[in-house]
Image (cartoon, rainbow, N blue to C red; front, side, top):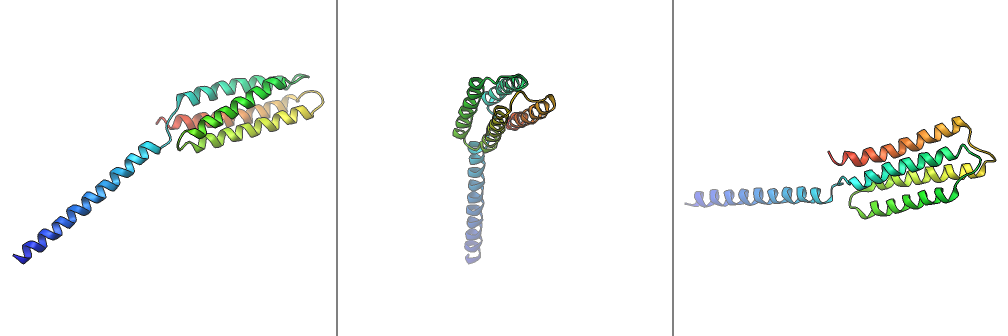
Length: 147
């Protein structure tokens, strides 16, 4: 009789441990689903539009004048995108990439404004390639979240 009670007690403890462990695993998986980075087609669309705008702006760097209002408009758009991304949970990667893109663009605009004349073709192509790769990286990061 005592053996049956001990066995029954051990069995109950095992059931409680297994149930507790299962509950913890279930809770963790739910948290992952809630807080995992989520694909956002709006972000991809905005990044693709941003890429086009920036490349058009960069083409103007090869001319004598720079459209400062257009450059400021693009920088303001990026600031809005950063704010939007920061409000999304677990989306630090895209936010960090947008901050990098904004920094690159700001440096390139300041470089262009400090020059007399326009950018040389090689300088223009290098900077366009760098900014394109940065934007493509942000787009790919967002698209990977869909998988």
